[in-house]
Image (cartoon, rainbow, N blue to C red; front, side):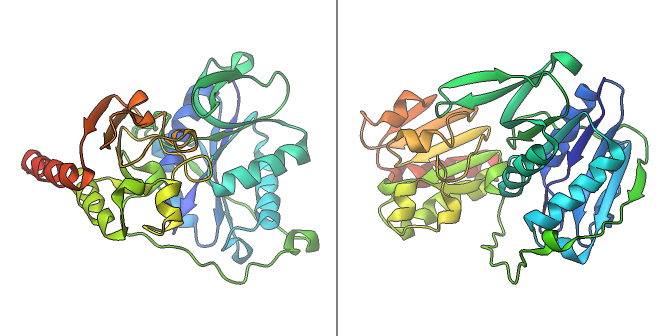
Length: 324
């Protein structure tokens, strides 16, 4: 048994699905012990409603104007305050930009063991083992922390999310934090983001990605049409981003986002190792490429040799018939 604290992953005022995935894992690992969620931000109290039904015994809310935008100093102080009150044995954060920054700082401050980018876990308590991908997804390693606090960042779209039905309200606990001058050494003046109205790329169940084979920016309209029919998101290789076909916010790969959808459709992507690092753990991979020798076919479950500008529109039309 171990007390588990989940740091809710919040984007644009909403809980991301990875929060429920971490809660699902927390309920198993806690094995009857207390599971808590930490909500950090400004005006986040309303997000606490319903978390109890997903297995949260306690919900710690740190609501402060200093937390409106992510700042490593203020968020670290807020999280340490919650941890001081709850005293968890295991701490979960999403393997997002915030989680990847915050987890090592907290681990260093507390002298805790940290495991990054986990995709699954085995056992409980002292036998708890985390699984993470290495070598661009070509191998997996099992890691355990033998003593003290365990901190882990969770790759989205890998763990089974908690299902509603716990039937409890969850105890709401408001936490007041006094920020010290060192916490405020950095001031965030403005945050400029690329706002997407579609599905979150890192949490999408279906991803349609384009490479240099798309040929130009207008080629991505075909991918957007297919992704729209399948309820998915559009991604890209670094080559497509470097060529100016799309924004870098869509980049998937070693230097971009890591995605693990149920279905990944690679259109005009050769399959360089750097790109495979960001998508090779997808459950089903479909490759569309004119070159039958393209490396992407070596990792694909299904391959279509042909011009994506002809294949993708035909796929879109066929899927429309099925989805109607």
